[in-house]
Length: 450
Image (cartoon, rainbow, N blue to C red; front, side, top):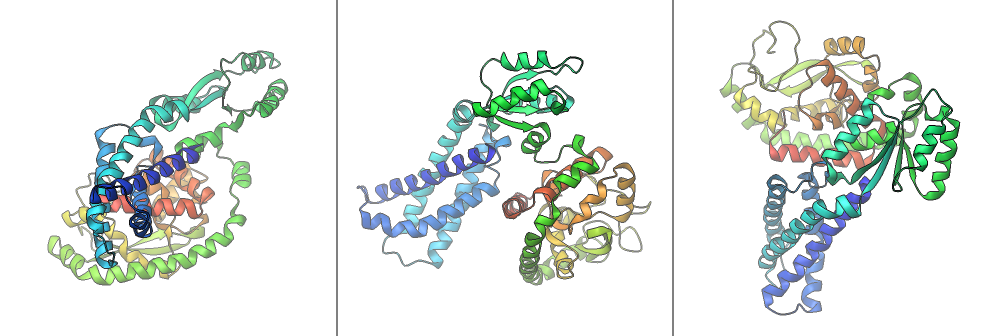
């Protein structure tokens, strides 16, 4: 349902951009556009509209969990419209040749197209998502995880879920009460979320089986948790769960394809590195004493140790050029060891550029769990036995967990990071990788990296 809602919004955005083009042509000539006038513009503007959809994705406007009718949300639409207009002007200057003046139509299209998108999004967030495309959810069994899910659903109605009811289980009886509650549930739920040990209740499972014929979807709590939070639920972590859920054999073909795309990406990053290196190196040297580059041991695929390369972003407080004087420690959000230039490099992710060397060496990929230091891995493995599962694949320059927050400096935070990393390992594929790349661009453009 989440994807259906995203596709609904996307198709609405695309349609309104074409309507905006129609109004743009109409105002340009102050008459109804002829078929010839409109058809000449369809091809170039279709390309630009696909670019617009990409920009909308990058700015996070398809993230339903954060889609709220507030100034921040609509400011993103305005920013996207301005960036799209600038890119559109550059496009027509480079690939010009149209008999009409497309730049005037481009400005009018941006005004009407994105204006209509703003109106469409307001009504979608205000009415459609919470009324028409709403999924009524009934939970069987109550637990801290169910409580957490209910709080999210209640506080974020724009994601399109509504709690239809909670059916508490009664482990000391034969299941009669539970079945009775299921039958008496007010309103027909669209989705039933199953809690723990439901399969032991035969009367309940028989009643749930009947719901298949009522076109009611039934899903386990772990799968629903994963859908809402986009991370693996820690309450499922067990050897048998990972054995059945992490189907690494089925990912082999995609991983080999990824090797090719990683090398292509490394070539592009290397070219960018050559162009920008003199400026970055000069800025680092002028800002603080110490080396331009920083080299540090990290844990890679299957637990192998390699050395990662980065631009130095911290003060060189040790003889090896590191910023540590009392042993290994995590970087924090307001770390006073970070230099002025280092803050900019981290915000724009430019400090990661030298890692194209690690990609060429097959030590890293473009996307994957961020590699940790051996000292931290050892401690985290003692506290979290399943932590080594992060090393099933190559670490990456950017990753799913890294996009959720910048720093993971405590045990609980690193457990959260593990949940996101394992979500990526379990679900990695073209769609998720493209989403990660686009969101990374969003962070670079917004300068909110850490």
